[in-house]
Image (cartoon, rainbow, N blue to C red; front, top):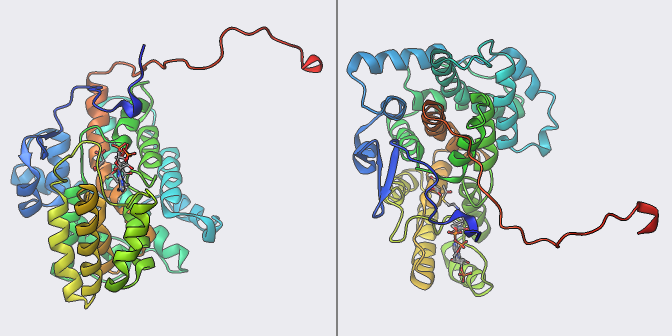
Amino acid sequence: MTATRGLEGVVATESSISSIIDDTLTYVGYNIDDLANHASFEEVVYLLWHKRLPKADELSELKQQLADNMAVPQEVLDHFKTYPIDNVHPMAALRTAVSLLGLYDDKSEDMSDEANYEKAIKLQAKVATIVTAFSRIRKGEEPVAPKKELSYAANFLYMLNGKEPEAIEEEAFNKALVLHADHELNASTFTARVCVATLSDIYSGVTAAIGALKGPLHGGANEQVMKMLTEIGSPDKVESYIQEKLDNKEKIMGFGHRVYRKGDPRAKHLREMSEKLTGLTGQEDLYKMSTQIEELVTGQKNLPPNVDFYSASVYHSLGIDHDLFTPIFAVSRMSGWIAHILEQYANNRLIRPRADYTGPGMQSYVPVNER
Ligand SMILES: CC(=O)SCCNC(=O)CCNC(=O)[C@H](O)C(C)(C)COP(=O)(O)OP(=O)(O)OC[C@H]1O[C@@H](n2cnc3c(N)ncnc32)[C@H](O)[C@@H]1OP(=O)(O)O
Ligand SMILES: O=C([O-])CC(=O)C(=O)O
């Protein structure tokens, strides 16, 4: 047996949800560029879960179901108030809150298709409320109830800030949600599938996935990108900062990808949004620094930016706290995790690979007082 480090290139499952072929990303056969330019996040959720685009009435029904299910149990909100707030990363709070949500769902252990679909709606609806409510509660503010007439993207920003977003903010946030919704067998989605392939419940699957997304080699990279931009501070400091890191063989967050070689097709949409939003908010230097970094890293290491790089300046321009960037990724990716969990249940087999053992050979047990 020979191990493939990081399972690179290993095809671990069949899936008809999203594909990456020749650096082109599609959701159920629709090019990500088309979806980013035209689709609402709710349409994409429907597409991923039903493997076709919704008709008008089906889309309205889904929007209604999401809006109707956004409220979270008071116990979950009260729980936030017990956290040692200064030490709690919002991704840790989200991981715990989603797990807690399962305790207050009487269908939590019901594995029927109907119950799983109901739980899918509840999770997608409530994840936005959890992230925004936690953000407000930790600042000593009251959570804001969603408005049923708003889109998912607008509601998120409304619940976060207590004021309805401008059209351009809603459009940018919707696009970011569309771009992050699914991505074949990335680490967090694989985690979700491994978890539910034991026939564990959907809350366990998404809780595990949140844990995997949190790491800086995956979803956590977007917060690290903003940390780097903040540390650099101004365009004149970019070159020395990045050069030092490259010379020290340190990783530059937001660059590189296990699957894409020529580049991540989502990055150009985020770059465009970053240019527009930083311009509108008078933060042109942020965009300038980002493009300088791209030039240096791509020029020297031939590593193009991934989805996390320009999303950082986009979210910053929308006035969002930096440690909420990865939770926002989770809000969007919840749709993809659920699609993969439902697909896994529909054609399940336990996922259990082997390890190439490299430890010592057979040893004789020695009692503790003789060692
Ligand atoms: C949503 C997402 O999850 S997108 C990815 C988000 N993560 C990041 O942005 C973190 C930075 N990027 C990385 O760490 C990597 O590119 C990953 C984790 C995304 C992919 O990693 P892998 O496919 O395992 O590549 P690996 O880490 O083995 O790197 C291969 C080589 O490229 C280099 N490399 C890869 N990414 C980077 C980077 N961002 N900066 C500098 N060098 C890099 C590695 O140092 C390594 O060089 P070496 O062969 O000389 O040792
Ligand atoms: O596919 C991956 O490895 C990571 C990624 O870009 C994503 O999850 O969006």
